Image (cartoon, rainbow, N blue to C red):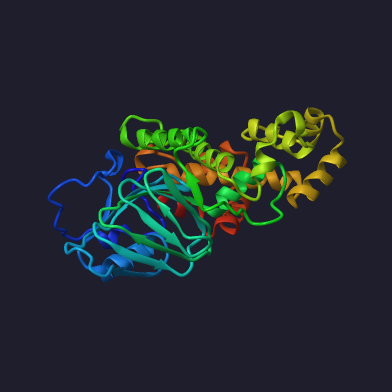
Length: 352
């Protein structure tokens, strides 16, 4: 099984029946060509499968739509970022009352999609994308021949990444603007990030295909979106460094990230940021709502989960070796903490 074939938000095993392949290619990105999730010519079946990937909703043919409806979806998932390609072939309306816990950048590769629901109605096309927010309604009216490339980012990891960039907890949920101008000069960073993702998925000997560098690539995508797209935290993120004082928590977390696999004490953190232990503890409590020790444990648990998620049976990876590498010496206590944090045992993550 490829590291990039596990779409945990959809059970792909239920879609592997015999299908009638398309007669001609409709521009599927080369990296996704071998990762078809489903193909159907039945509208109800398409609505059901799209609902598994996005959120439950309805799919209706537009009045006077040309015959020949066929829905296909291709996709891969890294850890918390997925690249998906949806093609509905003819003019249809997709209505979703409430999206799931993710942010999705929806980029038509041809034609246009009129976007309504949460905020002003606008047209997404090859130079303007839609950015969705969790738990919001969306109605998408696809023109004929308007396939869409989607970059889906799970909400909780995105919020955690934003927290680390800011060096403080989020006072309000992240709210991104819906319209994303892909033709602007600044958007080149996002386009570059998407192209890098495509290349890493496409080439069989890439770092991502070998299970390396996934976190770095995902953080690049998240940072690009957060730094480019206006949001309720955008001004703070892009404020020039000369006008933005680096807080004690940011300095401390930078030190922790750089030494996460090593022994870390509060005294070491205090010496690195030139603050007292008590001041650091108070700053973490005020900004992140947790102690430095709890923060270190959370980050290590995340690293363990990342490695176990990426591992394949042929790698010979064991729960014990990964846990010990990230500073968990007592395996019994580690397993209890891991299950409490992720809702499953470490061995269950490794087998998935």
